[in-house]
Image 1 (cartoon, helix red, strand yellow):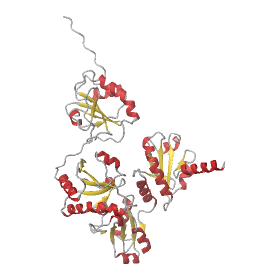
Image 2 (tube, rainbow, N blue to C red):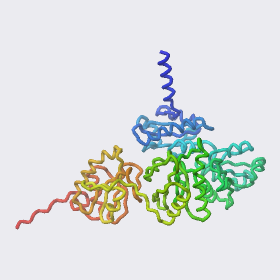
Image 3 (cartoon, rainbow, N blue to C red):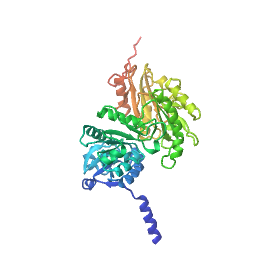
Image 4 (cartoon, helix red, strand yellow):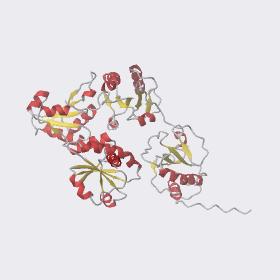
Length: 488
């Protein structure tokens, strides 16, 4: 009996969650108990919600212990329609930030634990932390992240006011602090200056670890400077900041670990930085970064390469978002040559593609290598971008096939599909969910198909939108009657 109780207690502890579960009956009363809260409105069947759940749980555990604490809440919208309706929830997951019990803004930040923590910490505390003494300053600077500090002779100066506006605008992206304390100003050696401090883990002989702002004191220019300087000569690229690195850029993927293996991580980073320094000194416009091969395993697979346990593997994005892969083994000489070839346009872009299939069915199969051959300006094309695991795609498949068979005699129209998980989707097509459908009129620009998904809906749409009138249907989607035969 005692053993059974112990096992039950252990299971209860293992399943305990730091995410608070609110419903229609208690949301209005309980949300006000928290100064700052992030609320996820979800549906149990939603795939995106399921993927968010473990990250949301990790963030909840961290933020529960932060100063000040931030509550992470979830509401099941399939069972609590009153609350979800009140806040206009129309898709899942929807995340909103509450302060003092009132909804203040939609959450549009990262959806992984570290990014959620960083964003919500910035929402909970002041945009810029006041450093009242040297101990406060030392604590702020002893961090694994960049920090920007405003040193002011007067807290009411115009520079201090401008700094405050910058901090408010960028607090979710950067740590800010300010001080007018005479002891701090004396120890640090700054007065009426804005200074960026690089974290110790990223410091090297190739770039300055402390950078002082020297341009005009305008909000726009200070923000621009912070964005540029926080990337550095060779950025530690994470899921949280990946979209901030400007193209063209080159990334070295390996076992990047600034918690357990700082020395090993910087061993390879310093080699990348040495090459990056050459390009910087030569005034060549290209960015360099390192990334964890585990955190970016999906991205690595998108380049068709396999991460190594010994040396970094290298890939790049061109100025037009083309993908390139360094096939040679990592070395500083090979990296330098790869970067120069990228800038000189000597590299062949990598294209993720399944083998070109035989076209035996009414629905034509698009892959990376045949896309441009099938989707041409000579014909109207309706195309579906799908994922093999997608339930909505599976439901659409028989209708889409029926549509293609019904219209297979239309010589100027192509009905096509592409597995967007196994092939690169070319620009300007954007696929963020499945299925995504596009219609490209003959000689025109593609546009998303937003209509119904019954066969009749597709027929009516195509009859109206195709450049040339369909042979079998009128412009209003009605089937044409066959002409009577002439008697001789």
